[in-house]
Image 1: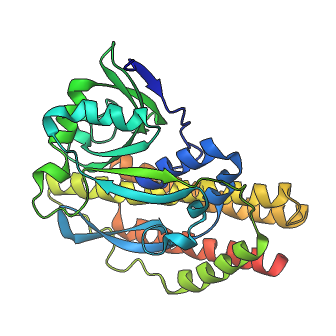
Image 2: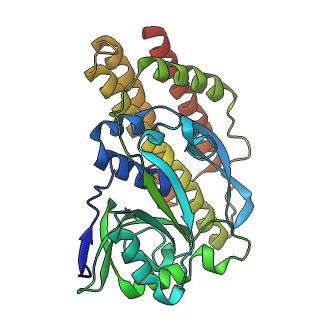
Length: 326
């Protein structure tokens, strides 16, 4: 008998935001084995300058995780996710049934969508076109809806998507409107047959702390956030800058959780934990100030650049504190 309702039972990993692919991958992993939340806290990240999608001359700082794209065998989730398989729908006219069939087989599917018509309450809703992949968690055929795990200003949660909106957002996705786009229509996450618990190791945290201290010494804000004075361009630049700063703010939530986990596991002592907590809190609060200035438009480039340089130096200092204290 054909199913009319299904849920894969994935719980949104919403402790902090990384990017659409990483948050959905950790949603799958932590739903399978709760210990993988520690893998999300692990400090395998780097700062890098990014170019705005619609304006290559505008550069802004952001953060990305190491390994998950270029060396997945070294990424912790390789112990949960065997492969991330790209796919193309056989018949776009039968889009909804193909998605439901994939879900019926217990497979986790992430579809390329245009955020302009995707989720009310998101940053892009009815404001601008922005493309990403959204994790489908289930469906209710009788009600004509799908359940997706995705991000809005209200948080990273499960949301209901009417069938017609899914069709529209997919039809207008980058996969369908950009001839030069080389990404797939969707990804399917194939899981390992056997999933072992994750173990957070102090040696790995310290190795990354040493790398980050070295990289942060060299990372420069020169050329960043060159926001145009023209009102329309200014708003677009502020939006891009906000996206990058938001990821940095969230990474420091992760660093707070990392230090908490190290303390709870007895890998660092109370005095070191207290020092690290105070330092990371200062850095986190600082980036939130910068984030608010992007949101409100109270952006003064020289002031923000100088403050960001100070925050990067303070971050380098707390990684050195960890290295010396541990």
